[in-house]
Image (cartoon, rainbow, N blue to C red):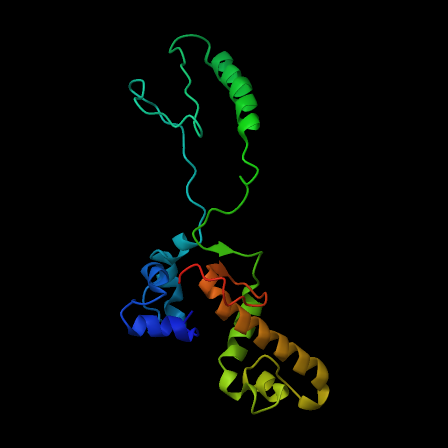
Length: 201
């Protein structure tokens, strides 16, 4: 997000503008160093990507005036009797009701910001390294970028320049798409960026 010019501009403007909603969640990231990431993550950043907590069992002192009959079931349980039998009866009856009401989208992520797939951090780091050299991307060879970024090390005579060029080009394209797709609220999205898919404008 620190590489996204539109977001850094929003930070410079005190969080105002078309990305103000995103700023409310992520804050001013301009001065956040790489070493500070874990502090930001622990201080609340991780909650942006977590699934919301499941609602637990609720014990009511009296019958409720209002009841969410779409998402919850009211059960009256005797306080005396065989506990194992009562639990078995609840499990049997409630299981049928829950299966009948099961939401087909129940397994879909409900996190505020969705993480797509299972990102490989090592790959994201390589993409970021190349993206940070974007000013040089068109003015030097991809092989030079590979060595300058530290992605490729060792003897230049031992590498296949075509393979390295293709890999660096892929890293750069994916990184560009990730940055441009930030506006959709999906991370990290390497698909071709759709400029009109703007959830925060």
